[in-house]
Image 1 (tube, rainbow, N blue to C red):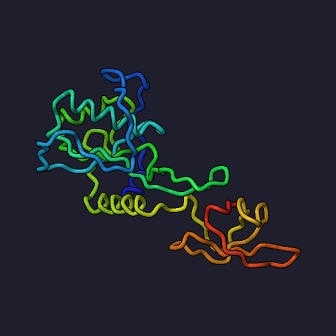
Image 2: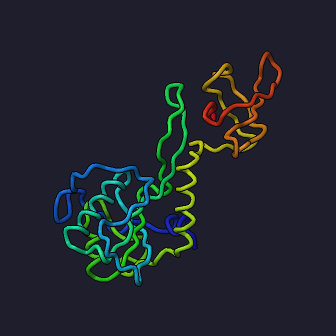
Amino acid sequence: MSIEEKLENSAPDETKDQANGDGKTPSVEETPSTEVQASTSEAVVDDGMKWYVVHTYSGYEQKARLALKERIRQNKMEKFFAEVLIPSENVIELVRGEKKTTSRKFFPGYVLVKMLLNDATWHLVKSTPKITGFVGNALTPPAVPEEEVLRITNQMAEGTLKPRPKVQFEEGENVRVVDGPFVNFNGVVEEVKPDKGKLRVLVSIFGRSTPVELDFVQVEKN
């Protein structure tokens, strides 16, 4: 079962007050979530470590990641953790007429943790501020297959090198042009060119359907 299917079929563990935890969320400067970062320890023992999905408050994935890494450091448990990962990719969108690159999370409200699961590490993760618990069985969560995580990290790397359009389109969809000489015209998607990030749209000009090639970011769905 893929990560997507697990998240669709799962519900968060019991929620807790955002102020809960053994301390305040550390005020550490956030780093881009597209980076795949390991814990600060150089002496990580990887034997037996597996990937697990952890649920966080939506919109607080980065704060949860930083809080967990800080608690790992404070408790000197670096050897039990390898990576804390927020699956995300770079996407392109049109903001005030200009193309902007932003980050989009694959699974909002979730982070992946590679760790050696035992009573101590389970409690450390579960009691971290902004984290509500593990996805799956509350006490013995299922591990995520390594190949699933590899697929995600490859997708992250591709998104870093070549940002994707934020919105995807399909043939036959009704769209409105939001940029360029045909702004505010309505049309129908005739062809999608995902590799080029372009669409061929049939736009009604003076009562006649005219094919126009546009960038993904130049149109929005009606």
